[in-house]
Length: 387
Image (tube, rainbow, N blue to C red; front, side, top):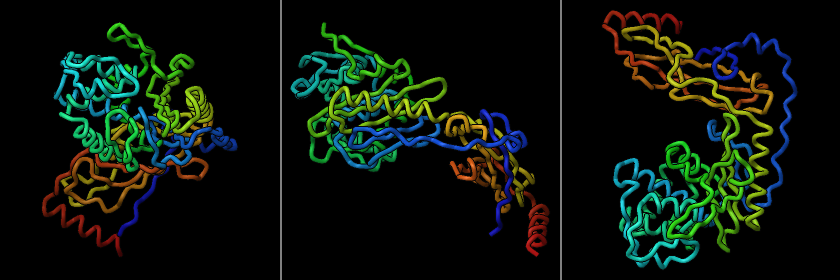
């Protein structure tokens, strides 16, 4: 198998490709303090754009998610809205079962009709278990069937340590998730449904003459925090998934099993502050833009532009971002027919000689197979190169 050829390029602010400037700079020593001590059974800190994990402890441990379950409930409903299977102004008839559900409530009344939008706000802001069950029954016919939909989405998102048995997070023997999985879910909600994510930052909601405040205390403490959800049961302890955006950097933190409502807020704030203080994230390359060229054999054209299928963001220790280096590895053995999006190499990002990440480079255009003379010519050239 032929070996790829390599090209090294420097990176700065996502647009400038100036290796010479970086090579002449004297790289300063890289020191990033360890994550703070977090009084939680498990935790996870994730950069939203790059997907880099900045801190974690027992992040794949299966634990009770309590009302953090409602992030998945909302996600399933958001997908149904996007698919056109229901609308925000659609009316939901409240069942006896939904009305009787224990725990935190929106205080809907049995047999009354309530709009989907109100129920979503009652669930997201007020953490209403009655609203969660009402939505689940309306979407799927029963909460049990809705839980199947929740698990289908968990599997699709790669949430390997999650299983949902209800829409509320009330204790159930085989109902569990993990800090890692919940961060993955939160990232999907923010990325796919920004038009609905705005409710997560709403501090209070009034329904039926009753005003309840959002239990996410960080919404009052930190203006950069705009979501997502808190949870508590005796089994789960006090839990929180939080997200904050400062300048162009967004972080997602998850803390599970803390001792109090104050503790989950304090530990979440500590994680977020750590991430913003010691790291920075920028877009390095725009997706579907040429970064290099690949030699194509036996095609109607001999070259094809290559690039990344989507924007590339990289997280690096603060003040060391301009020391990043990129190396493109373009395969020599690229043959037509070639489809747009086919992998033709890799882009490797490193810092101080240590690999940060690797992403596939893809063909930005299709290349059809050439005529008989082109194929024979390239075959002959290939034989000569092997000698």
